[in-house]
Image 1: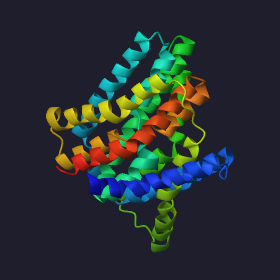
Image 2: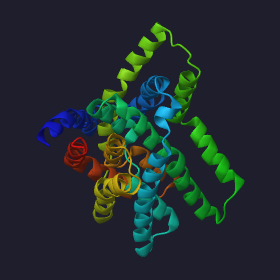
Image 3: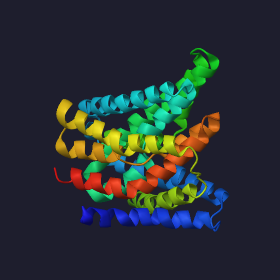
Image 4: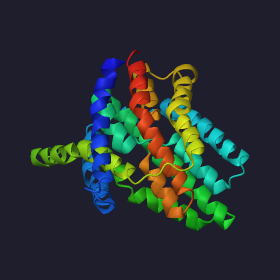
Length: 309
């Protein structure tokens, strides 16, 4: 446990440096927004393309893995939704809270950290978790919020969801990389070196951006944020562990990667969605802040556990 904590500590130290820069206004919110764009559209996309170009679809696509993750994540999603509705919250707010309970920072934190800590074999399972999060649950929250406001499903909602997926650079880079891999298209050495250099900026840039963005987060709605943090850091990985190890009998290594990915703190893009639709952004902000701080210990504990099998 102590060895794993020391290995994860540098990642969280980078987040801390970003937080300090944002808190002191050395890095303004505008600067953080542009750094996030650079990482999202360029550095992380280059990393994902290079990883997926060296994998085949068979290396990534594992239907029992998908069903195990979907089943466990869906169970926690429904629990968080039920608790929100029990508290009398409207469906839009319940959807946002459920998103906080199950969507972790796989793109900015999980891919760089888990690939280094668990080895490059972890990249395929991590990308599969990321794809399910983006395609299934990223679409679901838009459908629920928009549908609850319109009072019905409409073609416009499906168009919005489809365009959102097509425009997401993480999905585009993974798909393009798999196309290159499937067709055995050789990547010229200068291009491969370019992708390596640009992708190398993803880890420090993403972690710094996470920290800088946390500096603007508030700690309102403490009880709800604490509950959502427990869902994300404890209940979600626990549910995934039960589904992967005891229900679907997933390969232990892949199961460990799935559990570690489920243990990550609430993703920043949940706040972007909440802010865009004007649905409980302060609640999401606090959940991101609390879960990220607590994850310094909980993520280390989970990774130490999964590496044992």
